[in-house]
Image (cartoon, rainbow, N blue to C red; front, side, top):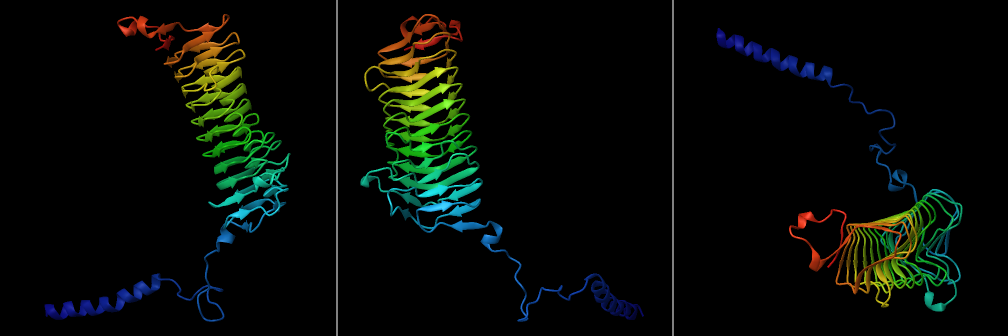
Length: 349
């Protein structure tokens, strides 16, 4: 009968399918070492210290003599105001403040050291993610070092006459940092360093002071005494905002490129400029200067100045002979149609 044949097929499949599945499932016996002596499976997850070995800094002063990664788990306050918070005496070190603060005691006077001091000659040191406050020798002192980085650090009330708040070595990167009320310069760069996306407020000297072949971009410098941004030679300053500095907004010496910056109400001392050039070979292009005594002042020679705009300055341009300057178009004299104006022109509105 047809029904009997179907039943026989069903019975055969019931027997064969599980047997076939079993033949392809593989052995179910755990491999050696998978079961502990207590009869439970052995864990295979690594601890955090195995994934990223780190050392805990539980008190300061603390000296690092071995390469590796270090971290904080609480705010740490100096108990001896004559020494540094953390001193680095080796290469290849990462210090994660982990959102916490290194607290000095500037009020006791003397040079109580820096929050983080990297001895000269060392390299590849990174400091990140926290706060430094009240250190006479700055939030970071790394003069004479190489290839370092400081990022996402807020520095309050650090520095003194001879010590900047953030003092880099050569080829350092300063990123996403803020310096408030430094006793000297807010951020000081040694050659071939980069500062980006930073803010400097009310430094006793300049907000950012760069030596040779440095790159400064997307930074804000507010209320600083000497200059918002001061560059020496071969530097680039782009997309920055020097605001209400007592001295010059940007001061440049030789062979620098100053481009696409917005300088507002600088020269609060009554004699300074939005952009001031003392040397030769600089390119001043595409900047906007609003308010202040002088817009762009150039005392050096052989500088190239084009496409800038000054607005509401007592005097828009004060450029001595011997420079190369696009024609200055005064607001009342702009031709119609405006498309006839030279693309190299400067404007005084």
